[in-house]
Length: 267
Image (cartoon, rainbow, N blue to C red):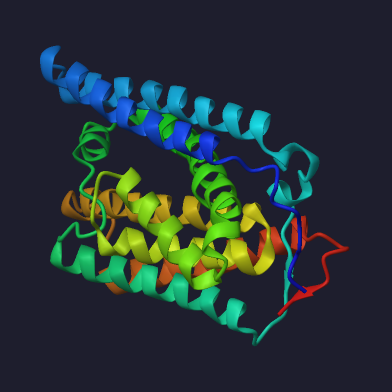
């Protein structure tokens, strides 16, 4: 069953404030990096700390000006999704397509999804502490993004847009623009995340899928670095297949450990 709730608690002013803060965020960041002439290592640490500030602002505003704090189960627990439903099939397709794109990218050494030169520098220099920091902050950033672009944006715009299709398209477009990119891949991933949230009402699903997407894409750099240095001899297909198995297993493990017993099956 779809979860029904009242949406009067969501204000347009809050959403506008958060979207406006993104403009200031990118403007200030670009000015700092350009005029201070930071090297790649300094840019990495500045961007990570700066990201923490933005994510903290996102989370604080959403918690303070929305009813999310009274429904924490949907932030932590997973819904029970019945097998052979359209949502379950979409989840499997998401994993399959993600791993297929990773396979194509590492086969051609073409970074179509991720062109993160800052992260690739840390990997090539074997700065393992920086890589761990990147992963931890990425988890934190994902929570902030999902609170804004799935939870707040969809619930705020629902009374106006009404149809699920419109909500999915608009919220995904906002999320893509937030990345200062017109990347179709990001738009499609945003549509999948919005679809998951609208179908279940569980933000935990969006946070999980968003995080595994980021980490899977970033792992391309690790594979290319290790394979080019002859440290591993996995073929691109073996690597992508391994990632696929890990993703499927991780999802079902989280579903098993964090399933909300009262949620029933989502159709």
